[in-house]
Length: 506
Image (cartoon, rainbow, N blue to C red; front, side, top):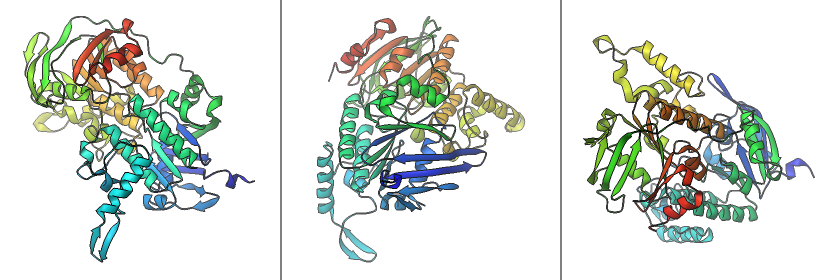
């Protein structure tokens, strides 16, 4: 039996270039039906570009795509869907003000009356079809719920249901667990195993190595736009994957801690949200030279808390002191003036300006720094700052004039870090700073954080990754249902203790 009968998908010798960079260089990918095929590599390795070629968002410069032994031309996502290829993107973009069922069947609503320009949607059938689909996948979501009322994890589940609704034979999942709790990850894996049993092939992009070794049948590793190789997951280990991804041995997952926390930089007393379902009576101290990790499950109100500290959310009561001085923060401008910076959780929603360049995204929070004579911009100083920042954070970009939307997710995150570091903050709040970032880039960000702490900066880091909290933090504040359930010194913290505190008020 020939190879064409063994693979549901072959991408042969795919190359793709953009101005100043060759994103894919003669890449071949072969996927078997009824398997999970993991695609791994550092940020900028070409994983997402390869999948965008498969889904018709890009068209390759050379090479061919073979489905079930037949060459196909996929020029847009509609053609991809019609060929049985569906994609769940890392950055979710649903229609928030419409219902779950309207989002799932968007563009293909069942019609009960068709009079040319006038069409009546059969809501009864759409509801029934949606309920049957969600019940089949064992998803606890009501078809008529507005998407804006769902958590990120529920939206992720809805997108999986939407992909399944196309009767896809190939489903691309790009970082599908980045916003899920451990319990939700277990449920996702059950769904994936069910899809495998139906003969569906899953192409699974993730930086979480333990996850890959658990769920994948085969693993293809990419580096610098090229395919390094494909292996059965049973043949791989954590260290082998890392060395093949980065092209070198990475002996330590976390850098050695050399920072020494000292006096109190910020004190929060009894901070309570105006929203009764959000955080309440939160008190803690943040020290100079300290990395304070904040842990908790989805819904613990960690993000809401730090956004309130940054002036993005209203508070009903409570006080904030910086260097023992009470401060009033009613807006991000107030927060910036107090030396506070916030790297937000969702970089595409509230971080980057996708239509602007790397340079503009880097300096946008600190434009006054470059005001020269007669109000003119000091272009030379701006260019120097941006180039130095990109070099320090190892941002992979053809030039600083490249649109930030054309960078990988990890490199976008580095640009956002550079943006806030240029404001020279005393307090740096990082909300999930390494989400969707590969192990090599994570290590670089950890090193940068520890260097900043060593220089006397005070850092708050929200993270949903237990090893990250344990490996980087000096103390770990755990939240449960909007309340502080405990604070653990690093030397006393364990995954079990954190989980016990995270579920204390549930």
